[in-house]
Length: 494
Image 1 (cartoon, rainbow, N blue to C red):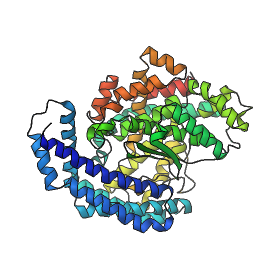
Image 2 (cartoon, rainbow, N blue to C red; image 1 turned 90 degrees about the vertical axis):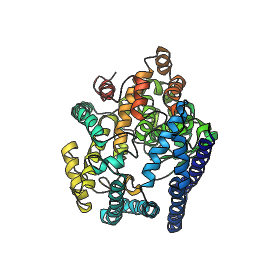
Image 3 (cartoon, rainbow, N blue to C red; image 1 turned 180 degrees about the vertical axis):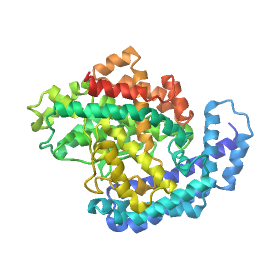
Image 4 (cartoon, helix red, strand yellow; image 1 turned 60 degrees about the horizontal axis):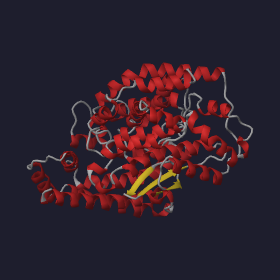
């Protein structure tokens, strides 16, 4: 390795150090920070993002990158790192430092404003912040550039190498099938209603089960922890520091458990990345669509499976008295019910993707100026009625339910459905190995995790998302695998 490459590695590790410091402050803001500290915290985060941007766009960075590009690199990992550094450098240098700092401060203020508006059921409280966030998104899109529509520029920040038209083509293939399947699944469950999980499930007991489950599927608590917050998330504060968060409902332990399994999937990916490459593309996750595939695989393909509950249902009955008169069959039928619901994070597998298709549609229209910020609640409700046959009773259960816009996350939502599609495809590829399938059916999930470590986690960002999917599963993202999974679970009840 050349001196220029080693110097560029050191510079990127310094930038990552600043970024993980900011992540620590962000984690604290979402968990334990007192409300009165928000103004100063927003300035701290703006300062750190500005310093990182300075380094990432400096003449020194440019010079080192150009020197590395002039060299011949036979090592594919080094070549991939240089490719990714160039991509991120080009995006970063198109944004002035002032805009980066303004974006950080705006999101820091928007998040608590969103939380209050959601609590108050008052979209008007959040609307001024959404105006600023939307203006920032359009400003960034124009600076980054795009081929077809502004959404391209934002989407590519989350799903490397993807264009809006690529995602739209996959979703157009997927939407007729998922719309019909969801309808059939809902009707089937309405005709034979399940027993409802609604009892007394003490939070302390939920915490015990959540930790035991997360640990059993591979999460390392020596290098991570679980805390409580309004909106569950996973964040990485360092190569040995991965934080999960969840929320609890005393009347239903499954909401928190499945949330923890989802975030554990994210955490397993982060803990499975090459620690020696931390701060480099080769030690970083490749896209949110791949990240979501890992969380959804553990939440849905494992957490809602018969093999998982063959092992864990007796333990849940030990912890919760209100489960002791349930049979395993009753429980499995209950947790795999299809029902149209207002809240995305509480949606079942059969109807979940309809929520994402709605948001993808709405975000594109909002960014293109086809609807205004003030029209968002009505536009949301009209689309919801069209797709679900329901009208949200409040903004809290409608357009205010998600934190993503307040984080500046326009372009983020499509990655959830890409994650679902990728999860089903990767799971299908993994269990073609008979030893993995046999272990899975016996509730031994280590071979499945080992496969993901080998085929996905260890690759970092050395392959682009669709190249990674093809290398691991034999083809690019294909929605037919997810439709087949849902048909088996909800229609065939296998």
